Image (cartoon, rainbow, N blue to C red; front, side, top):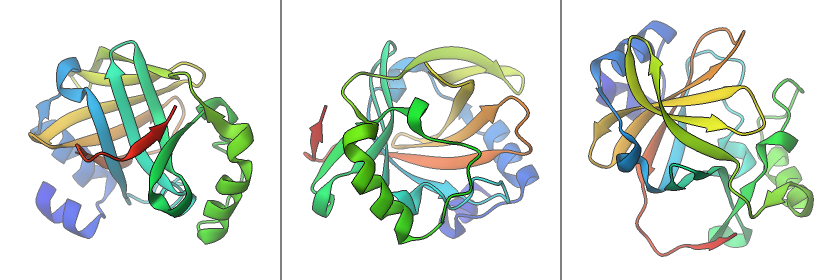
Length: 179
């Protein structure tokens, strides 16, 4: 089921949670490195926001230093980190290229050089799995291994209806990161 979900980038909330439950839990060491991501639409209110914004993925330097929001720089030839504290979760935002343009214009305000999250093993859905804990927002991103190069992520925010899901794929290319 997970391969079909990844190819269509769509799943019902029940399908994505069942897939997560059927995958191997990720551990902290496995998460180290740079990961490129894409959303999996589940009918969640945040569906469709990350990709038009220019979101690239995440960087896990180690368990104490995580950059939870990496975005493409000009021409997609570099990456920069954004401080999640400055990103609204409840404001109505366009799901179009206008959002990407706004992110580029706001880069001087949003960009950070400091890691803004940590990794911990946290119980989620009955088992411990690698979980990214944001420093400034009550958000946990839980990870399950799809294979040696991909993980399924489920965002967990208190009071959030349904799962917000995404896939991260390990990226070992030599893209420049401006931290």
